[in-house]
Amino acid sequence: MKVVTWNINGIRAFRGGIKKVLDSLDADVICIQETKVTRDLLDERIAIVDGYNSYFSYSRGRSGYSGVATYCKDRGTPFAAEEGLTGLLVNHKDAVGCYGDHTEFSSEELQLLDNEGRAVITQHKIKCQDKEKTLTVINVYCPRADPEKPERKRFKLQFYNLLQSRAEAVLKDGSHVIVLGDINTSHRPIDHCDPSEIDDFGENPGRKWLNGFLYSDKQEEGSDEEEHDKECEETDPLHGGKFVDTFRFFHPTRINAFTCWSTLTGARQTNYGTRIDYIFADCQLAKEQFVGADIMPEVEGSDHCPVWGQLSCSLISSPKPPPFCTRYLPEFAGKQQKLSRFLVKVDQKSAQSEQKNALPGSQEEEERRENLNPSGAANISVKKRSLTSDLVPPKGKKTKTVNASSKPKGNLLAFFKSKTKNVNQCEKPLNLDEAAKPPITEEVFSVTDTKSENPELISDGSSQQCSTADTDQHMNTKHSIPQPTVMQSDAKKGTSSVFWKSVLHGPPAPPCCKVHEEPCVLRTVKKEGPNMGKQFFVCARPQGHASNPEARCNFFAWVGKAK
Image (cartoon, rainbow, N blue to C red):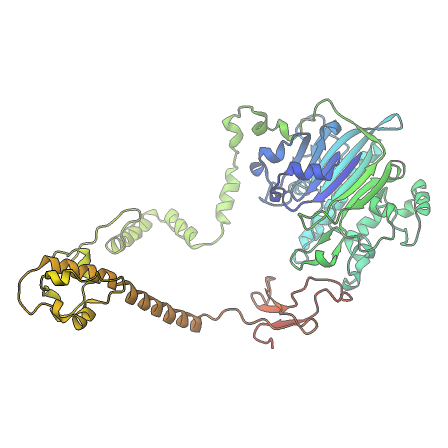
């Protein structure tokens, strides 16, 4: 049996299709995090994949946020599955159960912890040395603690405690347990690219929780696997939890083994990252059944890389997927839905409170005035319409422009005649000798030029009308237009470009960094504070350790002060 976990940073980002990705991972149970889909965005190509059965959890509050999914091969179909850690989202039978102690949480806190789509649990049957056992796989996407939002730090610790309570309750019930996913905390200094840059590294609340959750927290980097096995055999309360980090179980001293890198700084090129994606297993399962675990940094497509674990036991497939499987959703099962499914009952009190606490805005203020004083608002709107109706035509209606001049318009060729004194005079009719002359080439001058060079073609002042000469003149003027028009347009473009260049200055020329002597890149401060919106230059190379000469140097200069 093989399990894989991967934070894919958006399930719809894979152009080749999710099946191609799943087949390339070649695992029986594939747990993905940060799908960024809600149920309304979930399409059949993602939900129903040939050869797999899937189980999704979505964020209830935000679209394009969080979300986890577990794909199981048909040969490893689970016997039970459910969404969330609290049990509040379960509305069907064949659930996993064993929810642990929730006395430290309020009902509102429990609902919020499961409201962001961060957990999917599947329960399988495995065959270990001719013995049938139960294995529960908990796929989680733990919250990130935003430094600027203290409430999120508390939320993250609450989620950790809830996860530990559920996992230990399932383990106590007699099932083996695997907890895997994006835990969003690097455990030890060996799991971080630059732990010296973090003040009080070991005092981080997330790391303290991992110390209590994992059994081998006291294991030193130089200890060997035999000592580690002895620790697992003896359940000592001094060693904390009941689970093992399977990667460190097989690779206790490997350095530079990271699973997440910053895409903004190109840190993956220099392997300047952290290891925050794990496969945890209970001690007995890790010792008896796990034969290997490792990371897959060569697999791209996300800011994280997959992590795999291999077990010696084999899966026993359920004859049919549990009710939580996505193929049973009405939109994919081909069942006709009732109209009432699309309607949600709204509490009038909450609706009134939302109106009172509505966000300020010009349009909303106008609507509020209309609600408070509809007659006055109507009078104001009538005045506005009376003032603007004569000036601005209504949208979507074509208006005819009336020309004040009653003079009839001439034909199109009249606009191309040269404005000279003799423009109303016609030319003499051509005689046979002139008709025998070779035709005029494309490079023909304007009418005024023709007058100076061919005086015999110009009328001697008589008022005789001559249609033939007039037609000839129009033909000549048609050929004479393009050259001066192009020159004028080029001249206008030249003057306008000079004007705009003098008004709009482009980005400043980047300085060169002092170490590599390469042009820097321009960045903008997006963090709220006194420097928000300001621009600065930094080295263009990817971020890396200070000892790496190929990584970014410490050059920094504000725009305007760079030299």
